[in-house]
Image 1 (tube, rainbow, N blue to C red):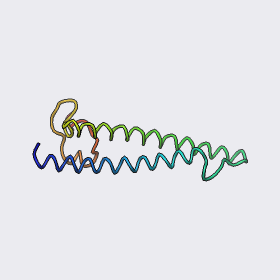
Image 2 (image 1 turned 30 degrees about the vertical axis):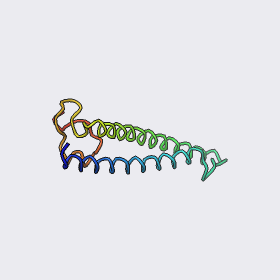
Image 3 (image 1 turned 120 degrees about the vertical axis):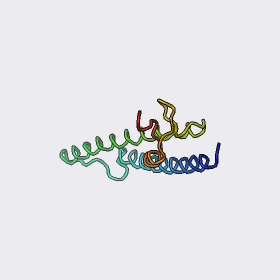
Image 4 (image 1 turned 120 degrees about the horizontal axis):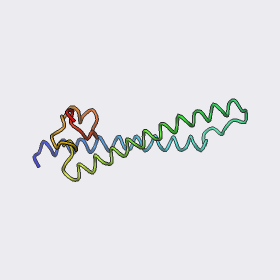
Length: 111
């Protein structure tokens, strides 16, 4: 592998690992909020309903973070396998700018 690809993969790995750490931290806070560790559920019915609506938002955040973590793990595996940056559909190289914006992207712009 050439030096430029090694540098790109090292940079991508660092970016992906940093984002994964952010997401894991976010998930930890969401789980804490689900358990109502910081603020127990209010006894007042309308306030409890609002808190439960907030739980729905937390669930959406949890799902989104979980999906993104799955994408990141798959990208890290592609780095390890030496196929990172190649379109999983057609095999062509994915544009470097596209990878910079979404480092776990799996398809080139054409696909």
